[in-house]
Length: 132
Image (cartoon, rainbow, N blue to C red; front, side):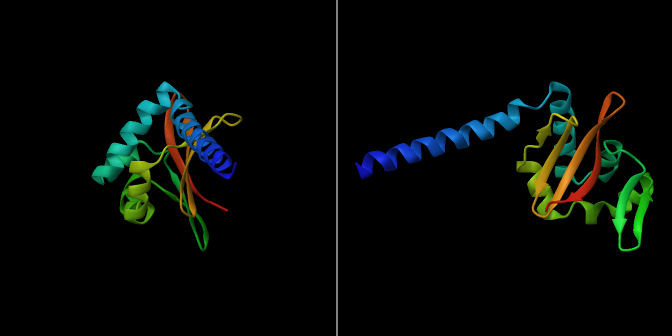
């Protein structure tokens, strides 16, 4: 009986895990998926110019003194602090979660949430939020 119960628990866990993983990928709209592949490639290459082009500028960088709006040149300069090695790994392996109510996508990377919204007809990287 214990063996049957353990097998059932493991099978249920595998089912839930596989359903959750495929759900995240399936919930990406074709437009966002195309954007996401460009964003992933740019981050993987460390192409700050391309990432800036995929970002809603001016970018609101939160500092101790408040919010500082970064134009393209300032964003490119700040790129290494916005996308350190751990985040590059997260972007390469991660799948953003779709929030249907607000039609946004969020990528959870440790303590940070990378948020993507539609601006006009284009998807853009919007901000980094705190994962609490």
